[in-house]
Image (cartoon, rainbow, N blue to C red; front, side, top):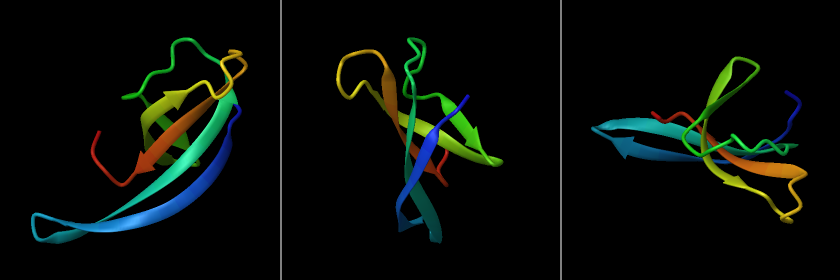
Length: 73
């Protein structure tokens, strides 16, 4: 499916003694009633966890997906 993907800033954290890098992104897609947080999205072989789904204007035309990569689901 088509999506506009905007990369956001990344973060580093120390988990169990090792540095872990995470990065966020925002995807804008056509409205789909079955999209939920907890699903995953793949773009150019990069796997993102969907952390949030929002209908920005309540008109059921577009969805904004808050994405995160580099962390376990």
